Length: 123
Image (cartoon, rainbow, N blue to C red):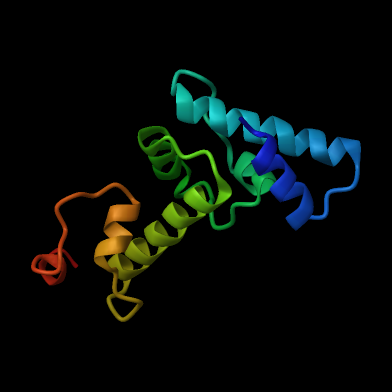
């Protein structure tokens, strides 16, 4: 289940030591276990960083973990998409001169019912 993701990260992050690959593997297993069963230990900021996901910190970790669980996200690309969309929405909420969230951004973070007709009201 984790072979493809581990190989992808070993390649993209140029991991060359057994210790580094073990850290990566442990983090992938924590994330995938939590996505399958949220009674397992929750991933930490360092688990996501080891896995190659950027933009997760103490401020958004709980929200990301909730999405990993509810959407059963187990890939770097899937998790990174959620992190990026959440960052756009949070940034816009704090300062509406920032990038305006799209319908896709809301869908990425698991919000349903936002469409072209309601987007401006939601924003």
